[in-house]
Length: 572
Image (tube, rainbow, N blue to C red):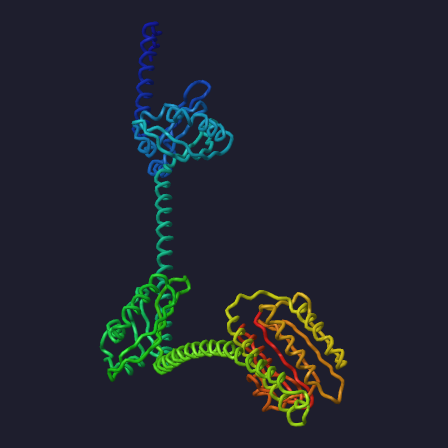
């Protein structure tokens, strides 16, 4: 075999050039194969420059998983260069895959998120990191993504694996879920409201059925109406009373049976109750089966549910016909009584005028008689007057004149009493009046050695003129002394106190007393029961009139031979 001739420098340079071209072609073919996906490889930036690591022996299933997943996947070099990106990431960012690989990851991040993303990347190189960022699409639109980072080693060279998840759809789902939840809440509330309404309806139906059962059991005509006043039901009592057919509508029946003279008032009051929800009450005449009108008392009350909503009116009609007729008879009787009272008042006024006139007109004749008697006594000699039969006759004539004058004075007092009825009164303290009367009667009290006990509190006032109050006290106290029992010491107790709406003055004695028949006629004018005591029989009549004129009354409780108690009730 012949020896090879040494190559010339030109030949060596040519051969070297050919070898370099072949290597360059192989590199280009490799890059083309990597870019087209024919060969799996990773380009990793090392200290001596980028190094290509082919993955011809890698699991094809792994590559298929990465390329087919919906999430974006990429590998970052230490300087942030994108060494690898899957097709999903390119689709998410609307960028060509060839423009992603070799670019920097931060170029996809808006300026406001650069610092945040760099912190996440730094954290990812130290271990693991997660966060949310916004990335630019090719058109410049920002989309929200979730990043998950972890470090991977390839032949002692590390790369940062990043999974990019689109969260916009998740946010839409969250919003939809929130909307669905809101709709579900509304539906649940509506369902609960429907259930409440259904329960309320059923409760209302049960209440209506119970109310109808109760209304059927009462003796009155009973009915129900809507909140607006339309009659909804009538119990059997109505149909028995009115003779209306059961088939006719309830709201057409009630008003048509009311007497025309009462209808306007009943409807006006019903409209007012519907407006104010106030109870309705009216008296009206309603026509019955026989065509007769009977008086009824109509009443209605509003009925509320648990929410205090007006649900219906419940009403009744009660027959008050007999009561109404009786009331009319009473009213007529009272009217007749008032008329009689007016006639009696006029008769009393006429009688008072007559008494006043008669007492005034009789004074002159009796004075003339007394003057004639005096003149007669002057003409009759003293010897004749001293004769046995003349003197008694003259004395009886004088006594008759004196009694006549006293009677005229009493009649005048009675007339004055009636005329003073309309005079104004004042509050008079009782105790000073009682003490004044006791002082006036001191000679009589001392003469009879009477014991007078006074129990009247100070500042106890009576609405009466002082003159009339003194007359009442004087008559009662003087009578208690005059009609004393001869066989025992005189003991009189005068007391007064407030009882309910009256001041009660009591005078109790241990005198002669009265039987029942005398007590019934005690206050009659000119009535006397003990002739051994001087008197006219008009004092008690006058104090009775004084007290009654002021709205009070006088009572007496007496036992014959035991004593009497007079109780005077003054209106306070």
